[in-house]
Amino acid sequence: MAHNACVPDSDVAPQPTALILYGGTGDLAKRMVLPAIYDLFARGLLPSQFKLVGNGRGDVAHEDFREHIHEVLTEFASEPEPEQWKAFSANVLFAGGGFKDDDPGSLLEVIAEAERDLGGSPALIHYLAIPPVAFEETTKAILTHQLNQPGTKAVYEKPYGSSLDGFYALDELVHSVFDEEQIYRIDHFLGKEATQNLLLTRFGNRMFSDLWNAEHIEQVQIDVPETLDIADRAGFYDATGAGLDMVVTHLFQVAAEVAMEPPLSMGAEDLQAARESVVAAFRPLDPAEVVFGQYRSYRETEGIPEDSTTDTFAAARLWIDTARWQGVPFLLRTGKKMATGAQRVSLVFRPSDGPLHSMGHIPNALIFDLKGSGAIEIQLIVKKPGPDVVPAETCTSLNLANVADGAMSPYTSLIFDVLDGNRSLFTSSAGLEAAFKAYAPLQGDQRPKVQIYEDDSWGPAAADALAGDTGWLLR
Ligand code: BG6
View 1: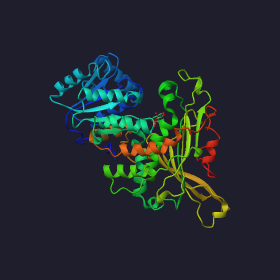
View 2: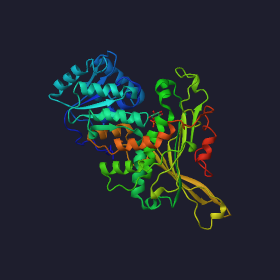
View 3: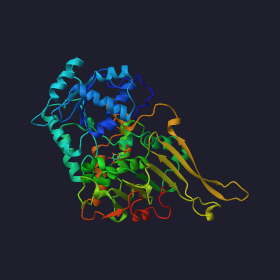
View 4: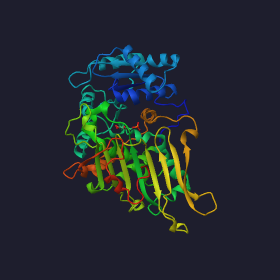
């Protein structure tokens, strides 16, 4: 479990550390990783002896990279406070010329420079914020140039593999360079405050923990519609699609977080084991219970082939073969260019048996809003004010930001865990293998046909049927 952000005096990774950020000037680094690293620094959560080494193909001077980070922070976080910035930027370097087997560019020299500054061999963290197609080349280069000494850590972005076979091939290569304990496969949905709250809310509150099963829960909806399109990353997206970008990754991991059996403790190993063992119980998706869609204007996007059949929408009914979840569908939905943007996990309760039974089923639900600092909502039946005894539906919401100061972005939280050596919120090799196995039926001849949906809509009508009579709570 990620550390609470309010404690700035933690003894994090006390040894000198150099974090090498591959793709240092790329989009992911800009939006997520660099702001998170600076945030850790500002909170006093980076090791006191720390170097950030950006890597990329271009020849960028150290000073230009620092300037780039300053701009990024100003755009995506807030303008750094001058004194703090001065202290941080003094520890930022850039190694240009790429990093390959046969040509390491300037990275080895820059690491040597960092070593001299730090006065000894730093622990290395390789952060691969690069497109998945480049994982193999960079991993091989790390081996060739012997940057995988014991104590080194490697962070891989998603998707880690694009099919079961692709996963096996990549994982074999990565394991030839690092031990499993050195590998951090990041899925930032697991780092969200509200996702982490799923466990605390469930296990900390008897009123929920006792109801967390098929006897009381009718269905679980994991719904992540997005309004944005893919214009700024056409190449990556067309080769990936919604299923790989979101379902086998984020949505599966969140489903596992909801569905896990109680871990033996809240310790890192027990939590990871509990999450991953439930992924192994995911029944392989049935293509007849999956709807793939593509928004109408997708093929007009620059860089997208006009006959592309990439899915920009996916909805699926997932079944989990554990006694706890017999007969309870986990409804997963996500898509680009949809009517609204949200990230919600809803546990929909069965209708109550008592005297209100005949008045129709208004669903009770416990809802986790994963966006931003997160919220927990309870959808309840109450009496409609007035002379008659009539049920009315109402919703109450707890904004998690109001619980205490110190919420962290998912990347801040997860990079802290990397420094701290805590792998509880990272996927293991066995867990990802199970996820790809459950997703595999959608990748062969049985892949559902992609149905066109209107821009800014709720996706193909066929997806509505997956949610049965209750329907999607968001519509
Ligand atoms: C990323 C996906 O991992 O998550 C994107 O590649 C998606 O397609 C994004 O938009 C959603 O993340 P966030 O930051 O909105 O939670």
